[in-house]
Length: 312
Length: 292
Image 1 (cartoon, chains in turn red, cyan):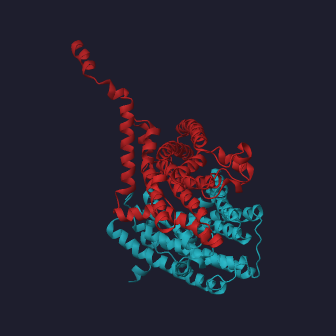
Image 2 (image 1 turned 90 degrees about the horizontal axis):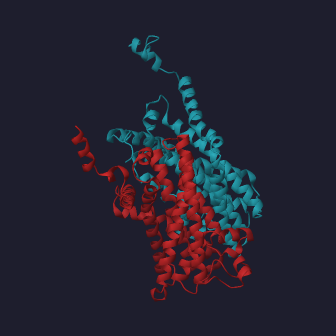
């Protein structure tokens, strides 16, 4: 008996009980991302899915383009580019933020799997972020299509040779982290609230839309709102992407009447200021998101919210 | 024969043979019962005030600032505020009317609705009543706060017609919601994407933030088919009398008639489609098939 008992630990793989660190994390993330993509896209034909995915961001851009046309006419070409780029990038922000929050609601309220996901050996946050990847991809596709529609049909001037690709890559990467962090905060909120929270990500994104200079320069906002906008990573992300894609274009942050110009005396932030502030604000929002998620997770566990379903 | 017509008291047949009054009262109770969670939910979820009222107001504000950046005439700010208020009803119609039966199917409630001894239309009507109360709160806040904060001046000459158009718009919108909800019973996961498709694209063709007449043929088509487009255009003409000039759309009296037609047609179609699609869903076994 003793010999057999000692033989078992020799054959036992401790990795199965204790996990294999980053390899398990990566596997959990990839599995969640694949699951998210299949849930989003595997039920319909690609053309229908494509229409569903791009109609919303294209229509959002067209609303703003028509608002410009009605008031300023075809003369406001400069502003039109500004609006199209901001609107296109906002589609990406909305998808990124909503993906994570909707994962919580989907798994808890519809599929009723959140409790099983939660007790699985993988890290809960890693799985949620993985689930959100599919929507981020859809958002990216929507943003690209809006930009393409802008270039082909709406007179957006785009010169691939003038693009600062290094800066574009850097700000996209850091901005993506900030968007995911905002999504994590919303997921933390949705863990505490009931089924109606489906609309919360859009409500938050809509409110941020006001503050980040997506479709109008911050200078038109009251000073406290401008200050709030400058503290958000999305403001710097949009400015960075605009500067990288369309060098010499209009700035959303600086200009006459802006807080930035009043503080610094410069007409608009340069590349270094944009990247530096984007990094700092993204780091801050990521730390806030991690803390908020852990607090929400603990509270949800304490109050039995992980397997709660609601109706209305 | 007489035994069949008048079943003996105390038998299951007798219990099932309801007179008209009892049927009416049961349906009335189901209207109240279905509206109850929506109204009561307002007081149970405090975060609702922030996420459903204050933040959407900021979204509306973003469009106000677009017009301010363009130095647009002040009545355009009024268009945005009015449009922002009406989106509350549209969002409620597509999320909590059209898609609701799909959610109910996912949650396992739909078969209970169909098995209960009430008309499904009363369940839909209860959803509409509850949703109307929820949305009215948001719409009133957006309209009142927007008017005060952004200094919107309404110039109304025909209050009676304006109120009539408003209520007709709501009737047509919720009629459309009831009709779509029966379609969503049959559809599967497309429901989610269709709901998304019914947001910004409909806002665009309805001229949410600009006069719909500027869209030409597309605008005319929207006025003929979408209650949000025709209702919003009529209300703008009435709330900003004389400010618009020629809009390229019918006068509000004609648009009110269009809304009457829409309200009657959509509600009637909701009833017909609910029956047809219920039968189809039963045949295809989709009434209780969840998550597909």
